[in-house]
Image 1 (cartoon, rainbow, N blue to C red):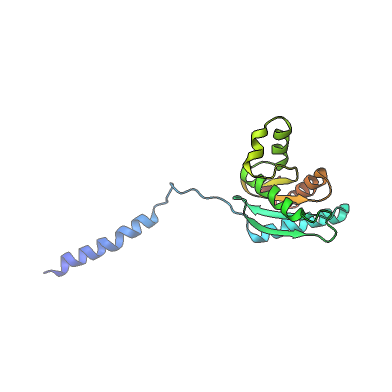
Image 2: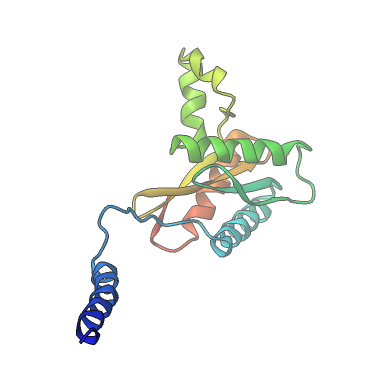
Length: 165
């Protein structure tokens, strides 16, 4: 006699969670992430370009929050503090979702307030975009700002087509 209500309650309890699990939650956004393997590919491509051009450098790759994933300084890199510069440029580029040189240009153009942000406003970092979304940045410190940008752009161009410079 009490078995039927108990059985119905048990079936109801088991089927309700399954119903909710089957529904797609459209309130949660999804995003691409920069993984270690892709960071390694970027590092290798940057080092290959730097070696081919004779511009040894420091390279830093960060995620979209500016947190380091991978950093390296090549033998013969001209600036001992280059690794810190590369990391700072990459962090700035990731957080502002634009090349770090854009912020340097803003300061040189009279936007002095940007100096107080605590970020590194120097040319030499490029955001890493996948399907239009910034997933990180690559920062370079070689011998000149123009070479820094050239190495970063070459590294991005060497990656999969989904990654856009």
